[in-house]
Image (tube, rainbow, N blue to C red; front, side, top):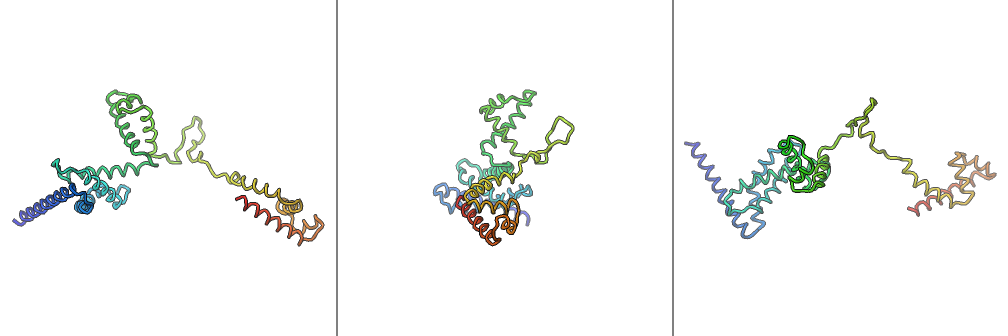
Amino acid sequence: MKETLEQKSKEEIRAADRKESRRLFVEYAKTKDEGIKEKIVIQYMNLVRFLAGKFAYRGEPLEDLIQVGCLGLVKAIDRYDLSKGVEFTTYVAPTIVGEIKRHFRDKGWSFKVPRRLQELNASVNRSVEELSSKLNRPPTIGEIATKLSVTEEEVLEAQELGQAYTPLSLDVQIEVDHDKRSPNLLDYLGKADFVLEGVEDRVSLQRAFEKLDAKEQLVLYLRFYENLSQNEIAKHLHTLQMHVSRIQARAIEKLRKIMTEKK
């Protein structure tokens, strides 16, 4: 008796919820009031959480999936036609699930690919399976294009972009014809050429160096290219070490100003 009363009570609650839902949809259809739309969203949030929970533990945070599911719910509210006699729960569930699955498809690509090409790639893959079964051989590009009513170039583009879904590891070995160690993709990865990066600086420094007077050039050359001390340079020039120090300081300051002006 108690179970019967509880069951009857639950059915009455569900009936009341459906009645309230229909009332809100009728009012929203007339007014397009965002406040009413928000009430409908709140009313079906538990359904969103339930459906999003089915996709938990697949590498995406549950809260993110709930947000995606809410997007599907909002889309369904805008498209729902109460006059067709279909319960909104029946209508909205596939929309929410579809939005979540689309989210996983988008996240699976290694770089951003237009939705049109993602969908075409999926259609091409299905067509290959269907035509292979029907023809007992792999279909040609032309046969796939004919089946999908697209150009051969679009089929090729979709197939090439399909490789972006599962990128290769840099450790993947490349087959070669000899018995030596097979190279991997990492062996072909370019590295920074620090010598090349310094070319521009060396050219700029050379041009700035040419603007120094002869004595300044000589002092810097002996100091930084011949690695002579200031005392040794002073003896070479028959002058004082203090004088060499002043020439060196003046020359370096000139170079600094010239290089700064160029930047």
